[in-house]
Length: 242
Length: 291
Image (cartoon, rainbow over all chains, first blue to last red; front, top):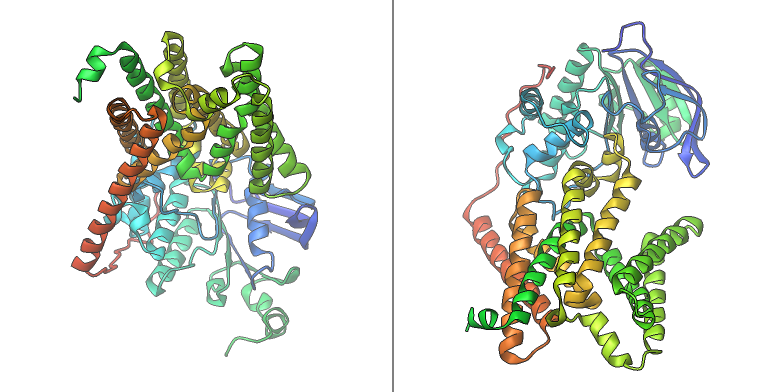
């Protein structure tokens, strides 16, 4: 686990985008263990692009980006990424337990056999996300919300120090959303740094830092600062009810 | 009627063994073709080997060498067209597919026995397999099985999400290419048996049947092997008794088995869906940490 003095995510004038065409420029931030950064914006505002760049799936176009002091994507055991709408194709003959266990592959590599500890982590992750009763069901038979819980359990199984979550509450009902908030709080209490993309303003309540995006950084700071009415109006065209 | 043809005919026994070896190899490679959605590139590879085999036949060398060179050219071509010209993978595969097929037909047309050679490449010559072919198919099965076993974790991740493979520390490009390599080896080892035109049927139909029932990849491969082997046996029997093309009989049997299996699962699903209402009552234990 990172020491409290360590910076888990550090960016300086970072520009992210696709094929050398930047979507969001000049992102500078420092995150420490246990902190939560919430990225909020409309579709196409750059939230997922930032997360993919942090996960090492896209190259930074400009500026500096370090995750746990290393290049993004170079520490798969210590950084976990939940993509937006993870694929669960109808043909995949996998049980929920198998999908969750895939979260341990970064630790196991090609040749190591899963240990008792690995199996215990898988069981605990399923229990925490409330999907343990469906452990032996084929994932293709589950509802969208249950599949999302399964993918969340897979991310937790990584036991990472940094969680990059792209719309983790998508497809979840009110209980599911509450569960995600509790899981994030629990992970943070153990020093895990979390970056979460969302459309929902209420997801930002527990954040240390909120970044409001509209293909640029509209505002960044503590929730009460970053979510001021003038910024929300600029970003979404409306303000939240008081 | 069911055993006698194989007991009395050495050619048929050889064909059965060859067919089963091909069925198991196709089951392993086909499982990943189905799960990763590689059917089109599998089809293109199967046809892309045609010019290599045709050239090898004209030069009097092994068709396997020609097929291997041809598939390498095909894969390099797909990679260059899709990367350099920013065309979709499908477009690149389609271009190379028809280009290689046309080239193969042109080369074959230089042969004195044009129709016979082309037919042999496209539809196979299962009843003409010899000991050397069997050894080659056994080697192909061992290589494909070993690669699939060693790379099972990244292969599985790739089937779910390419980004998941990459963020789990596996090179998605390396393992994608390795997956294509086992498909290519399977195509090369199978063209003698079922032909380049029909090998896709053996790659897809048994694996698709396995996907209908299996809850684990290993079970899917097992079911696909079983369906492929049964198709080989039934196809050879049909071919023997009714004097029909062996390769086509085998592939058609595999497709029919899939049709029956799919109908069965659909009826079963309808009955189950009518039998109970879905309720989601997840119980959660958030707040504790998993470390």
